[in-house]
Length: 337
Image (cartoon, rainbow, N blue to C red; front, side):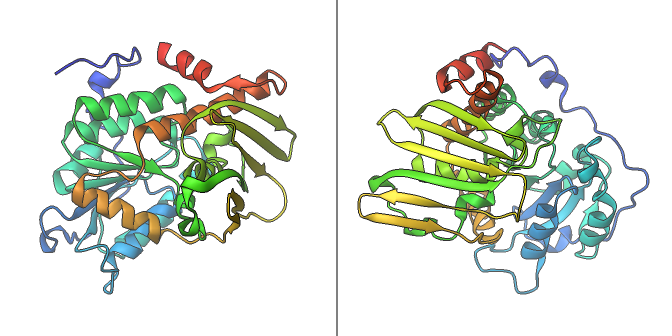
């Protein structure tokens, strides 16, 4: 099998080594024995509300028929080690999922022995490459929650590893399935404006942490093909303007004051469509389960990589005082490592 070409691979060779043990957590009764082989779901990271939402949806006695038999049977709680807003959630979320008959394990290696597919949920994108490699080496399908990584270079590396191990994977925000999106005929879209909160986290590039929600909505509408990005930045607001190769323009507004809200406007040849409100986690979870069943991803690697290049170009535009930055330039830099 061909070696990874990406030069940040030195640690990847060792990524399947054990993770931190959580000695304070004891295993809870497992439901694995009662779940059909192939339907056992494992979670990495109990530091996000996404984890508990997915457990509740899948393990409910009256679970949606679109989740045919898939149950979360085990979880490895360790998420971020230094992002306080994430680490403080782990104890409560651990207790919450234990009540849903989810076994708590001490390492990713232990988790992989007990499950068939994986939800990689920790908020901390810096950990995702190393964690994903362990899952891929075990031959298991994995959904990686947003952000897929904390750098464009790691995003590219994750998809290279996916190819190497011949395990397709995908990442998405639940805002890809915001209400109203089902009305959009993408063949007649002439432009779009989207918005979401864009709270900052010092360990991640500006938009990777939370602005990604609105950017993902923008890409769901516009598709790939953005050529350059310009960013207007103030303490409380970001406006990012992308110009696509066919001349269409898409904008993202990220806010850090006022009420947190999500939405947008799609401009089409036949009129405008208003997006929103947020439709919850289940539409995304249906796509995840379909991927677990079929191996078919609803979002291509190319789209996710360009989406992250869009956000990286926005950061570079900020560094350059609002200058236009091409998607090609940031991709070239990231691939050089």
